[in-house]
Length: 88
Image 1 (cartoon, rainbow, N blue to C red):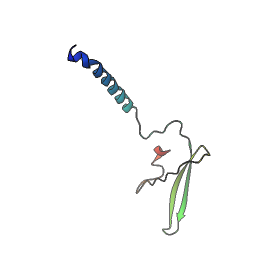
Image 2: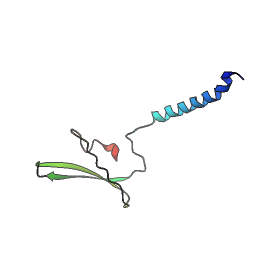
Image 3: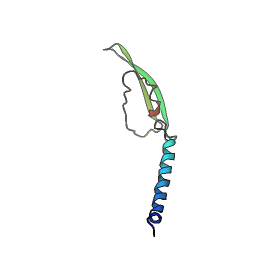
Image 4: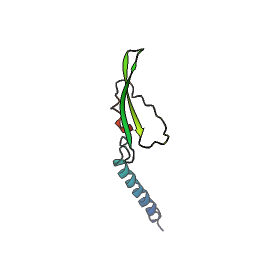
């Protein structure tokens, strides 16, 4: 058995895996939401009297009434609460 015929099935296997990875990567959007994610969005604001400033706040409430984890995300300087729509 030649060396080529011994390694041909393995080369074909890895070639197929490589094609699958490339196809999956082409369709991948890291900012898209899973279709099953449902959240109620509330835009609020509150006054910071010490700095005499209004602070905008966006809440994403899960559709379920079950206990859920809390994530606090600060967009940083120059951002807005509308700028991170991929979060929910």
